[in-house]
Image (tube, rainbow, N blue to C red; front, side, top):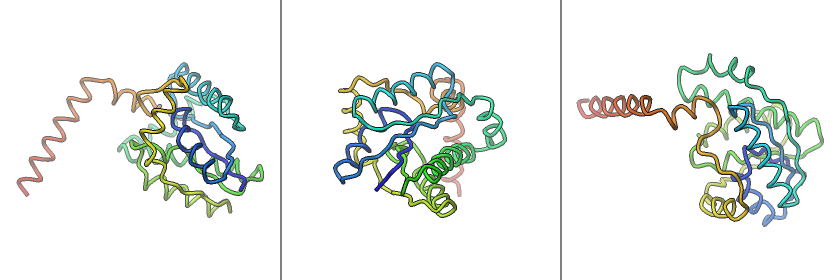
Length: 198
């Protein structure tokens, strides 16, 4: 099987690559992540994805265009809800991966996004399945989350840069803004109170 593996970063690739190889599949890594900002963060993740591929002797392809403006043009209209923003992001990255796979003779594709316990797994799967049908490329589905801790351990052993947010400026704010976290806690308490009253 000629499999293209979309890579969101080096650390998230550790367990998926190990699992695929244990199943007799040798993927080609593909880095396409216009969601990652600021520039230095994007550059660090690209370099660590490349470092991982080199260390693991895996073929690696990267789209090296930093697309902050294009990302914001797509993200801001979808920003009404986290689900809308994330849907846009998954759609863009997965469709580009499928398109690349179709244009370059791959039989199938997958993504290391399916390793993260923080991503919206079912939403990503439905998006991937949709584009698999549209482009006539098989979607190789695997729930890589079972190897979450193993992947963390492997990434530390390899000395890979480990990020603390998904990549976009919105998630960076959600991760670090005390004001935003305080507002979210207040909203969650109010939702809980309303549920108890119902």
